[in-house]
Length: 135
Image (cartoon, rainbow, N blue to C red; front, top):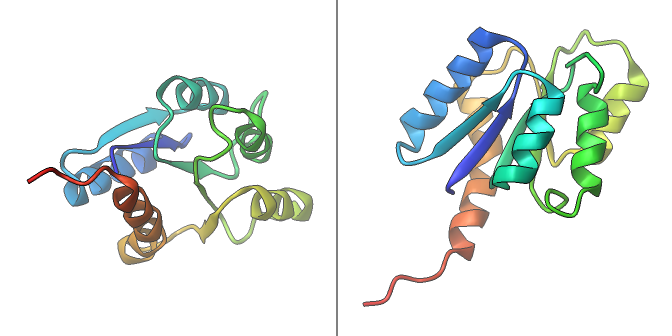
């Protein structure tokens, strides 16, 4: 896995995710965005191997809307998206929409082990698609 895009409005959470990802994958390029519109732009520009998306993001484009856009853009429709949100988030339509558009789901607060357990299958899939090293 070469790159992950983190779309998260909370600065402390964004930094914690960045630090954790780099601890596990020191060579990883972690791209961060604090708004969905910035995240959508960065996703198209960088085409990361994985996107971590805050489902509760608000603004001109919500987390739910961003997930839908990512599924429809030719540049990003194949990129796995892992969403996370609070279990107390009450908008059932948004929750259902995120379930339909995301590859995996985590409720906040989540443990490091839970996050890595969800990320690993995607990381392994990307790594298995890499060209074999010549001897």
